[in-house]
Amino acid sequence: MSNASFAEFERTFLAHQQSWLRAATTTKECLAIKRRTAEDILLGAYGRECTWKEFSRALRRTEKLAYDNVGRRAHVACLFAMTANQFPDQADRARRKLDDAERRLLLLRRDNPTRMEFLEEISRIRRMARWKAPGSLAS
Image 1 (spheres, helix red, strand yellow):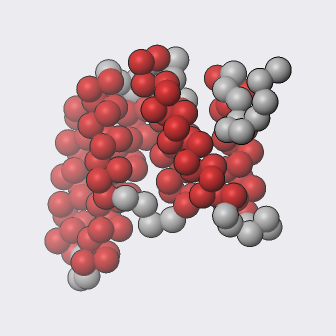
Image 2 (spheres, rainbow, N blue to C red; image 1 turned 180 degrees about the vertical axis):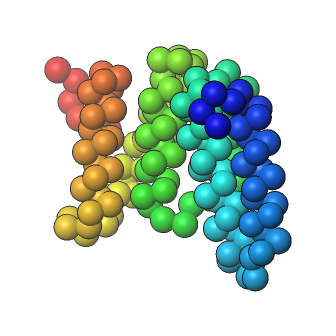
Image 3 (cartoon, rainbow, N blue to C red; image 1 turned 30 degrees about the vertical axis):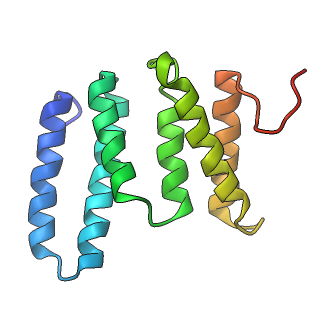
């Protein structure tokens, strides 16, 4: 699957999603399947350095289905933020999404592993992009 075009990759995942949905027994399970599939497709779009049209379609799909936890929201925000060089006209939107994910992570308990992992990742992405943290003073 790694050499497949994004269109082939997406079609394959959506076909698998249909078979998984047929096996699902609850609405909650169906939503979880759709969310995971959407996140996998977004990750594939990121890894294949797709066009904005392809990446934004995958991003919209994840946003439409929402997130079942803060870690998944942070993961999507991190993927989007890492495309800032590839899609410079979307950098402000990616930064806002990253800032929002960080705010939500900060609401978790300090010893929460998800909080610690993603705050470190957000910090790393900000350093790479040379973005200041929200509320920090410009030097």
